[in-house]
Image (cartoon, helix red, strand yellow):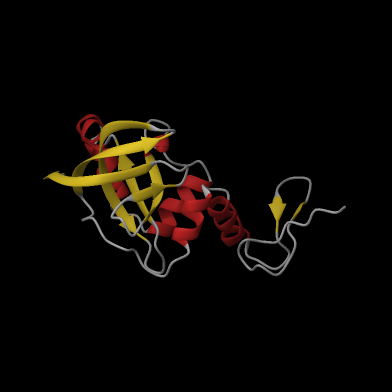
Length: 164
């Protein structure tokens, strides 16, 4: 039985490994890699990310306290929305934002000059600074006013605490 891997970007061609990297013969390599990255995320995140617009918006640049759930555990944290995609229900945000912003304000402020696509490209290419790379994550909003992160973490009960 053959296993086919249809390109998550064009959804027409089978992608393949050329000895160096995965490629789609039909797509621009950058677009293919970004679509592949998104398609590897949590299934709920993938479905919500495909929607044409978010269910709700949090203000970019504002720090929010919230809870995060994962594997039936709940923790308190803070998030800082950075940027929303213009054509879908995707966003980038920083978690543990209050602590990280105090430690690296210049680095965090530089992220606000990026578009969603620029941040996604940095993430896919592992070009974000190692100190914050794991804290800068894509997410998608849900009907219940929560955000599901790429790996399945669920952030909810947002309360604005301050501006950066």
